[in-house]
Amino acid sequence: MKKSRLVNYLLFIPLFGWAQQEPKPYGALPSEGQLRWHEMETYCLIHYTPTTFQDKEWGFGDADPSLFNPSNFDADQIAQAAASAGFKGLISVAKHHDGFCLWPTATTDYSIRQSPWKNGKGDMVKEFMQASHDHGLQFGVYLSAWDRNDTRYSTPVYADAYRAQLTELMTNYGELFTSWHDGANGGDGYYGGKNEKRIINRTTYYEWQERTWPIVRQYQPFAVVFSDIGPDIRWVGNEHGFAGETSWATFTPMGIDGRPPVPGDSDYSKSPTGDRNGEYWIPAECDVPQRPGWFYHSNQNDKVKTPDQLFEIYLKSVGRGGAMNLGLAPMPEGILHPNDVKSLDGFGKKVAATFATNLAQGAKIEASNIRGNSKKFSAAFILDDDRYSYYASDDGVVNPALEITLTHAQEFDIIRLRENIKLGQRLDSVRIDMWKDGQWKHVASATSIGASRLIKLDQPIQAQKLKVSLYAPVAPTLSDFGLFKEAASNFSFAMQSNSLIKLKANEYSVESGSNMKKAYDNDPNTFGVIAEYPNGFIFTLRGPIKGFTYLPRQDGNKEGIATKYNIAISDDNKSWKTLVDGEFSNVSANPVEQTVLFNETVQAKYIRFIPKETIGKLFTVAEFGLLGYE
Image 1 (cartoon, helix red, strand yellow):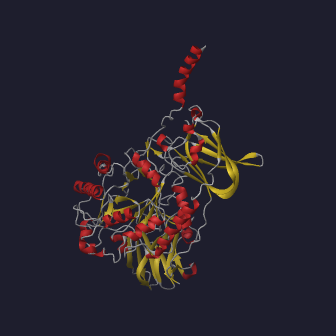
Image 2: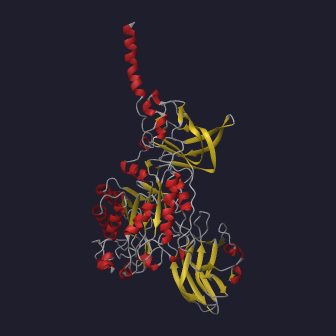
Image 3: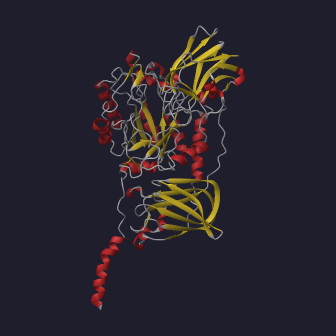
């Protein structure tokens, strides 16, 4: 009898040991650098180049370096404002599309060396780095692949110079958390005075995988590389800051018409959502400017996003498994506007107050199944505020349920869930029910949990007992469960808006056909469409104006959006004088209202707008507007 018991015990040991093993990883997995990035959740991107002094969104590359001479540059003020909002990192736009380098590079004369700031001996990238570290923030750099100044652009010599610039940034500024690469490249530019359009083969020109990104890997092994398609972090496909309601961290980049996917030439249709069981772990970064544009414009001082607006972005970026990258825009003097600072501080206080206490703490949890009945995978781990300790079920149990009984009834409107992503993104979906009136009542459902999922309820509810049902193709690994109540935000701007207002419809008239009436109906959700517009759009003025506005269509389609324009004035509707010949920079990715302010008040009788270049063959407009004084 004793021998039989011993044999049975020995046979049971391997089974018992196997039952307590961690679940096997599922699908694509994050690297160490990507794990660190997920833990950051939020950071900021600082746009500050000569373009700021030109009041443009994209510099043409023709600004004289003497223009770049901030009177009160203070990297500390900017970093402190970001830290007050709870952001975990800063990214310096070391070179934007205008080609001006904010560090004393050896690769071009078009840099801070040629500016009067600090007599050409400054290094703004270094100052941003130091200020970041002083305020406990990680640091990263943005290096535009497009250079509208460099006369070498489109030749192999420039591509080599670009990689040399990247090497300088990767080796001279300490440990970096990211290397950020924009998808905009190739097109019109100054190019050393050539003033022409240069087209490059985006597939081969930069040799991203062969020669460029390996520089980051060599010198900054833990830095995540961002571009439209990764390789570490992908663009979310818009500049609103919102990931898809379903947004997988796994993603398979796709090219167009058989071409390989590269920055600026890829299929972005799945960028907001990712791919369930995608080939690579490439989560979404949700980049969004704090103002309508990425660069500072004085006419946007009253359009800074409020703490409540930023909180919504947080819920739809970090709360959908991605990261929130907020664009900061210093004024020409070199500091953030008081409205920007106050909004950041209010956002930080709102987030801190909302998530200060997990209302589920102390709850009793009963699981329908626990992996190997082992404490190692206890459901209690979902309340310990550790991303990587977790509850797990047995391999054959892919739909376990957790019944959570709170210490007392709590009112909440945010539910937080996380997976242990070291083992992959395993959960397909979750369902949350509350016990009410003797039965389970559905509260919320969500897909693509991943690193973090924040479910915002339409209205606060009160409950004491909840059930969380998990659905996965393999044993789920839930690492966090939290209940929170959104904190109120009592906010007002530090400074009032400027005196410019939009003229009413009876303060001007316009010559247009019936198919363009929607361009003047004060409804941003409708838009006018026209195929031919040789004479543009002529407005008859009844008083002085100071500016012109163009709102692109807002339905997500880019067809017909104007990218270049001409605005002219006339007193007789026959002889025209050009007032502005310009471009709506970045309007394709960020189709917000475009404002053109005139250098002087216009007193003419007529003003004409001609879209010189559009996306596609049509011209579309949601709203035209003329700006006057209050």
